[in-house]
Image (cartoon, rainbow, N blue to C red; front, side):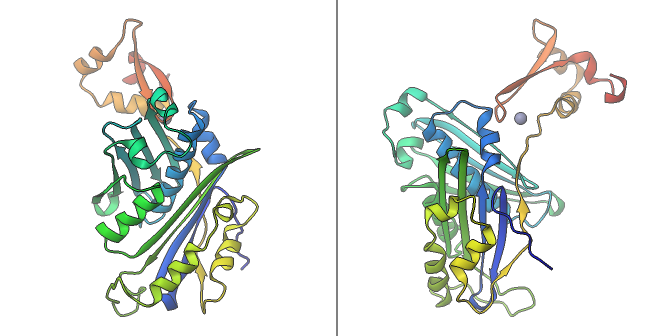
Length: 306
Ligand SMILES: [Zn+2]
């Protein structure tokens, strides 16, 4: 069967069984432009969000359930950025950054994470509704980059040797962002004996060196198919398996029907209290920078009767 060759708005899973390693490579192009089009961010925030969305895609691809949700939220104190939220649900991504434009302008071209986020933390939440599994990891936003912060989350909090690389650049035709996440398997692959996690496992430095050799321009080059990049990095390995690529898209849950269904769940008196002077309920979506006027009379009627 010929493999599907994807080069952008996609994530591909990689397994290297003989080295007990697995990984993901993702590249985002049009999906980043679509998400950024809802906002009017300065270039620095655009680049940060492009990288954060790439990280979100890499982490989201680790979810076992197709309806699982991954949320990345920066909680900050005293930084130029007040809030950053990205999430992933079934291959759909969205995100926004609330920030102080004036303070940001004073930071120069390459601010550190503490300059951007102050005393900041990144909360990474995995939600898997089918198995009712929910857990959250917290990582300090320290160091030079989001990739470094994510890597220390896995290595320190999860005790899984990991390597994370992220890159984003604005090209003539729009943004291109790319990233990879490779991990030493804490257990052997399915069907094998359990492999004890060892931070000093001899196979891991080898995989980390190969994955870490990726250049930022290889991650972001929209003309380089993801499976070609896998081949470039790992062609000397005995066996490298690529999994079915996953398509990534922009997605939000703020469509008017959904918003009406949420409002309909409130008791009638609470609904009445939401109505503004113009007789409408206004619901804001920070992800889309949009406000939805909802007619209270429409809330109680099914969509087919409107
Ligand atoms: Zn929205």
